[in-house]
Length: 433
Ligand SMILES: C[S@@+](CC[C@H](N)C(=O)[O-])C[C@H]1O[C@@H](n2cnc3c(N)ncnc32)[C@H](O)[C@@H]1O
Image (cartoon, rainbow, N blue to C red; front, side, top):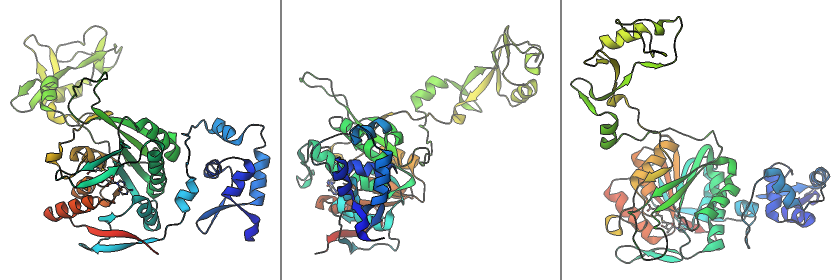
């Protein structure tokens, strides 16, 4: 077909009198057919006409689209078109700074993550199982190291910050595998806007959790406000129900064990006991019959068959009270741990204890990486800072890629990885002139 038979996304937008972003949405939802030519999308005149025939409506198209999808978007000026973000020109290359091992993954790339992520699309599209990012929070501040070196600046605020993030999120979505997921760490001043951007990029249906993290001790100040000692981690899947989920459990604390398993057995250790009967009467069956000279209490039945009760008793797992009441022994060591809920306490350490300002807690990262990736997964952090995500991924035998554009980050990662014998290949992103 001749090139002139094609319309650009911009021409379709002009025709429909909608934004290019709206046209992108029609394409994404397969309402409008498009083909990719030289990294840009084109629409055949026939496809455009059939779209027009299908969608003849008196309503403004954007409104019609919103009605159909029941979705909502954050509007602000200078919002870029998704297709331009994804397929706009990127003409750089990675230059090796230091090679430490043969495997190409397990690398740190120095450069602006927008360009680096776009370049990674050439090699890692749909290959990343887990993204954890802890971007700047749009605070308008500079962050310095303990020696007062400038670590990074967080000068973009409000809609400029949101757009900065949105652009990177679109590319991260493309890098995620079908079983992949993303955790985005953000504060509560801007986080609710970021949630709507995440809904736009990943789809509201792929939202899984908004985790509240206790980040510090309770605050005491004179301002007329409640102390803010939490931030949030937004967790989305690339494709809900397909994401890696290892259902890691929270182990029992000593205090909880003492509360739930207060007794100590010479052979079984900490334990508690449960009744061996349950509500409901068995009319004719085995669980309604006499066992060891006892009938189940009125209106109840034995929880187990009499054969199983005999077995439990033989194994010493029935505790008989002084007045002859039997209960089943439940051992603390058989407890499988607790389902993790969406309130996490992982406090950050002060700058004098860490390598990098705003460095995140290793235990928090370990929970995320264990739950949402497997040993052969690639974990990506494109706001790597101290390299905390990379370090924890490495200790859990994941592959990993880190990106940051701060010299301080590069130096800290080089030093700590060398000290801890973590093999890493270092690259920088160079734009071709
Ligand atoms: C909050 S810190 C991350 C801290 C990290 N999670 C840790 O535990 O050490 C944000 C990082 O994003 C980096 N950053 C900001 N804008 C960037 C950009 N456009 N490209 C690459 N890195 C960027 C900063 O240099 C900074 O290191």
